[in-house]
Length: 345
Image 1 (tube, helix red, strand yellow):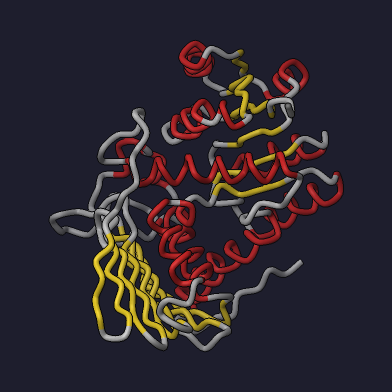
Image 2 (spheres, rainbow, N blue to C red):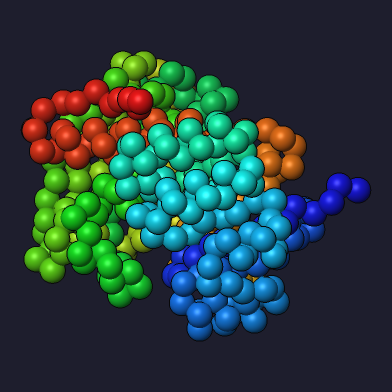
C-alpha cells in the first residue's frame, strides 16, 4: 500500500478550518495531516490541539521537523509568494489559496519557482469543485445543451463578510480580487478562454476602501459571451450566500443552477428539474455547506492528482490565466475600455 501523503497547513484563520477538516476527512484516501503553522502562537496551539498535530509559528522549523510532502498555504494573499517560494524551493509540493498572488509578477514568480525545482503546484480555486458546479460542468461537457453561446455567472449577496474578515474593509482591491476571481474562473472553465472583457465597478458601502460590486462582460475565444458579476451589497431575500447562480444557453438547450443546488435543464424544448442530492459531511454547517463541500472536493482532487504524479486541473500555469482575468478586469474598470487578458512574462 502506498504511504500516506504528509500534509502541513500554513495559516489557521477563518477559512483554514475547512481545509483542515477536509484533510482529516481524506485520511482514508491517503492524507495525513502532520502539522499546522500560524504566526499567532495561541491560534497555532489551539488548532494543533484540535487536530492532534504539531504546531509551529515559523515556516522553516515546521518544514525541517514535520517533513511534509505537500503544504497547503491558507494565508493572506500578500504572504503567498514568499511562503510558496520557500516551500517550492525545497522541492515540496504546494497548494496556494486563491487569489494566487498579489500581482501578476508575483504569480509568475511562484510558477517559475515550481518549474525550476520541479515541485508540484496547485491553486485552491474551489468554486469549480463545488459538487453542483461540477455537475453543471459534466452536463455541459457531455453536450447536453450543445455548444455554449451565452452565460451568466453571478455571486450576489448581502452577507456580512467583514465580521469574519475585517481586513476586507481596508483592501483597495476587494470584490474582484476576493470573489470575482472565483466567478471569472467559472466563466472561463465553462465557456472557454477569454479574448477580452470590460468591467464596471462600484463602491456601494462607504465603510470599504475598495470596490464591493463588479459587473463584467466577457467575450470568449469561442465567440460565446458571458456576464460575470459579484457584489457584497445585494439586499435580497432569500440571500443565496455562499452559492453561485449560473445560467447557460447552448445551441440545443439551456441550463440554470439555482440557489439550493437544483438544476433546471432544458433539452429539445423540455424542462427537467434535477435535485441537489449531495450529502454534506457531519462537520459542515448547513449555511456554509456548499462552500465547505467545494473545499473538500478541491482537496480530494489535489490529493488524488498529487499521489498519481499528475498535474492538478488548477495548476499554477492554468491559474495564471484566471489571475490575468482579474488584472484585466481592474484595467478595464479603470479605463472603461475592453481589455485583452495577458499572462505576460
